[in-house]
Length: 83
Image (tube, rainbow, N blue to C red; front, side):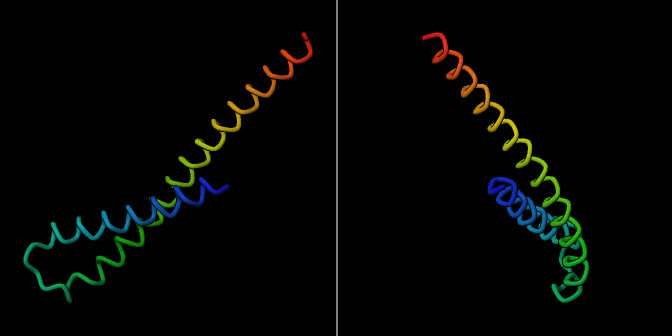
């Protein structure tokens, strides 16, 4: 569960920073006061999208880790039973 939460927060942060950069690039030389609302809107959307993508990625990574641990435990049990 820890990896899922960590990846989710990282995805949200990356999404919001990405929105900040994208809005600044698209707006050009506009004053920051004109870009604040769109930055928050796009940032919130991309932060949510990043959080979802991060949670999925973290969940898959956690599943793969637990699957490998289960396989190793099974091999260990089989080798102990043969002895």
